[in-house]
Image 1: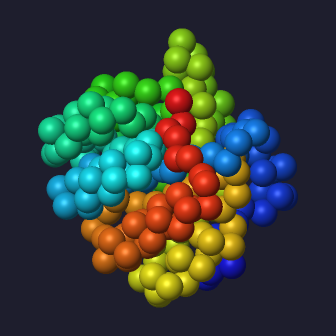
Image 2: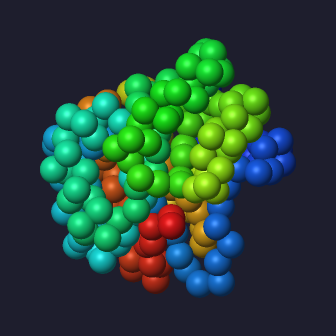
Image 3: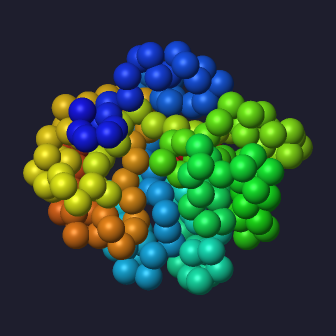
Length: 211
């Protein structure tokens, strides 16, 4: 465990929120990559280029205001066969935001992000907010996507080596893994992502998008 968060989601957290998706049941060696906080003008094109080298697909949980700022990169994500998810319009912390404001922010992001997949920033979402979101997006059958493994790439106190070790130790078939195509993560992402894809490709893993 790093300071304030777990690299590997503990069983009790999954049990606490059973309606949220933490892993995906699989029979084959498949990992589900996800990237939060983009599109970013530098990090996201790097991620897309790197994924292409390994024939890997991923799900990009995008912030609405970043989609508005980088529409061409957002369209490239879709054009290259990746999936997208809603990550709010302004990267709001659900625990620190009024329920009505939070739901409106997600709805604002949905104007540019057409997806039934949603990931709360920081993983912080009240049960009441989740219920309100499911009602607001009932026609799309909203899925709240969490994760099995955090890369730690966003943490300035954690080295790229430590991130790599955490990924190698904790990633298993069906894992949903979180990276960040963001300014804060950029320095480590350049090192950690290619190394992870290289090693797990050699182990015989496939990389698929959450759909």
